[in-house]
Image (cartoon, rainbow, N blue to C red):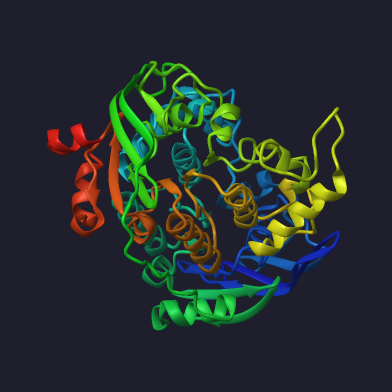
Length: 510
């Protein structure tokens, strides 16, 4: 019999108040693409970090190509042919793309690494500039860096944690071609994704985790999305119910917004026309790095350089207004970066409430420098319960949560404010199917309650599920809007390349 590429036996890892992995066993054969499936907080990422050497298990053993291993750190993992693409990226913000990749490939010169990045980027369709500082990249562009860095090590075992969450359908197809080729050449792949159709297309084996324990092993090609959902969360995710609704007056109106980028690696916004009415969801699709970040900064108030008269909320000109002022007008915003922008990693969930809720929280009263901590924690606990956030209570620090659970808390914090205008970027990035259905359901509930909702996402399936109208952003330009009934994956894919015809009537209407 062929020796397994990777064999885990009895892996256990506990943290204060939670057992992340409990007696987990898993076997991956050479050339096998093996899915690890589970809801947020099931222990998937912890297990992958143990394999990669960034977390030490409390018990159990790891065998690589039949040899008992103690992988003490990621450097040893890479030396033994293991590479990993993390869901939360391990990149130094002040260094360039090439310098970040070079750190893991010290036998090569920086010039050689730069050439290799360009070659791999071209081969895999992962457009990236090696000279750009990481702090200028969008989340999608950072993920491209991580993928390229992993592939350049020529791994025997490649671990991918939500690798397609911010890739376009075309880029996903190209990545799958690459992954299938790697597998055919003998590379084993451990693949974490909440996109069940991807797992069924790509993977030939699947281990299911629930609550840190293995609850099933299957061949996903012989399963349906429904059966995989039942194995993962114990039920099928609820179907979203969309009701026909007549949109009201424009809550946000953007007219002729042009804005020069703040740094040389940004994107200029060019004559943006956009409106979002009460009782509707407007979606914006596009490949990461085409102006989404610049547009969101301008709309949220993080960038206050917009020309006067270019952005209105209701009758108020907010073009130069700071975020706090816009919140007082009913705007609440969820950024794509959870840790560092959506939440302070080292603060508790309760204290993270204060980032955006000081205007709308009646308890605790922030007066005279005093904060009613008990009331604040009670409010955070209510959001934790309402959005089914798996956390050690309101005092748990943000960085202790899994990515999906932190996302649920941040989205819940802003929805709980009962906004008049809700802007959300990548609402279900890295979130399991059950939680994604809940968040999308909450977005539609906001719409039905009369809120104006703007969703920026690189997941077309998500946009087609929640939007009433769609735009595409490409190279800092915004397409005309198209009603959902007239939109197709093919048309939106073409528009992502900037291939749309100007529609004067739409622009005037916007």
